[in-house]
Amino acid sequence: MDWIIEAMGRPERVAPFLKATRDQPGHVKNNTLAVLEYSHAFATVGVCNREAGGNGRRRLTVRGTRGTAELCPLECFDGRPLRLELLLREGNEAFPAGAHALSFGAVRDRYESLLLDFARVIRGEIRPAHDARHDCLVHEAVLAASGYTEWRQGD
Image (tube, rainbow, N blue to C red; front, side):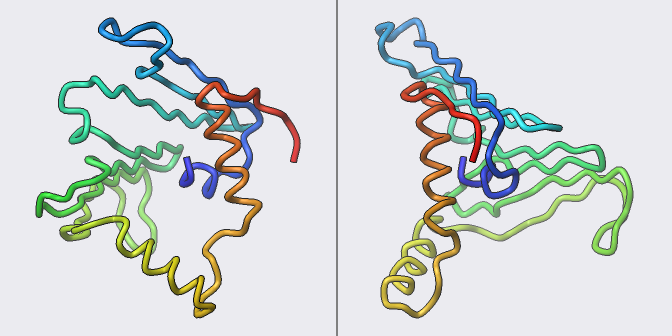
């Protein structure tokens, strides 16, 4: 959700779709989809904690009129490199048109660098990457996407 809010800003609407898988009681919402609506785009976030092989299939996909980028799996801590598939309709200064596979090397732990940066913020060595307004908006969107609050329009 954080990445969506950072890239797209405040959605016009957040619509949660919350279901229980057949093996769970109805109050356990473990098969979910949230749609964030923007003036010219949608963002979707879905999760099912019972999906077979789900961790290896988690992905971030960005689709646009000039290309598509997909990071899958979203996390990979088994020594394999993190890869991004990029498809461009037109070339640019960095890549020609067509399909590209980008490797970011093996990632040991995605939280380690975040916690080290957080410690530097606390010590006053660097400024936070986001302000409190951004963080509150992310939490507001998560609560609405989870069905805990109604989405309110406006800023």
